[in-house]
Amino acid sequence: MVESQRIHVVGVATVFAWEVVETCRRLGLTPVCVDNYGGAHDRLLDELRDAYTQLGQAHQDAAALQMDVAELCSSKRRLRQDNARLTRKAAKAQDRLAQIESSHSWRLTAPLRRLRSGR
Image (cartoon, rainbow, N blue to C red; front, top):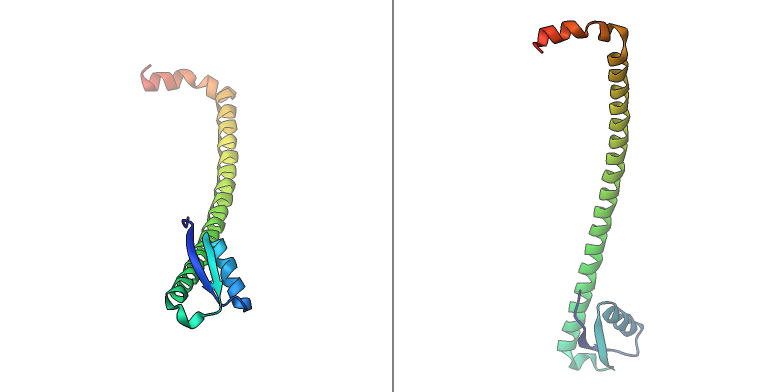
């Protein structure tokens, strides 16, 4: 987050100056002086260039974050599908095991299995 700072904007009579003012406001900068003497304010022009650089970086960061969010959403969707598939597979395996354990042959061979395991 950018701290609120004061910045002077040059060239009030141009459309460009108002774009700069809006850009400064979006960056949290406060324009306090607007004049038409651009050549006399090199420091102010440097501040404006810095503000545009910050805005450009903010746009790049936002684009990168949007890509990260899209990738995370895709991963989340894939993991949910995998989880649903594995849950269904586990439920089928539990049902099959329950069928085996409740079958006549399983119950009839229970004493033999106990003898073999030594219980």
